[in-house]
Image 1 (cartoon, rainbow, N blue to C red):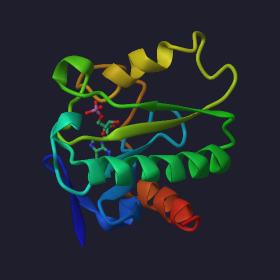
Image 2 (cartoon, helix red, strand yellow):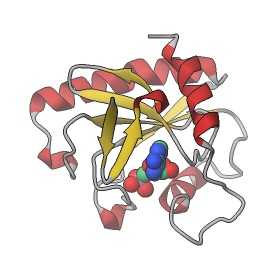
Image 3 (cartoon, rainbow, N blue to C red):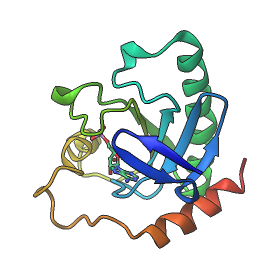
Length: 148
Ligand code: AMW
């Protein structure tokens, strides 16, 4: 079975959690190790488009997933972020919550994470960051699935 993430058809093998109204996937271009995404199953574009029960399920899922990736990737904190609309940096037109495990010294300035988040998946930006292979993503998703 596959999942819809904006215009992307996502193979279930890169998802590691599916709830009644949400799903979690590993990232094709993570900004830090363990940078994952939680999305509503319904492909709503903007946060304002979500129904209360979808917000409830989405953020309960964000909390569960945050705890797992912080532990699994040896983080000590978490950045949780939504780029809600194109001017906020949204490239995939389907609500998604970024979850990024954080640790001391991971960025020269703590808030640099937001700059990278805004540009990491735009074409022609930051050539050091590569789109990951499906195989690499599947291995990570399988590891994370064990926690749920
Ligand atoms: W946005 O810039 O819309 O807030 O974030 C989109 C996120 O989705 C980025 O982190 C990007 O790396 C990720 N992404 C884009 N396409 C895929 C995909 N096919 N599978 C997994 N992650 C993806």
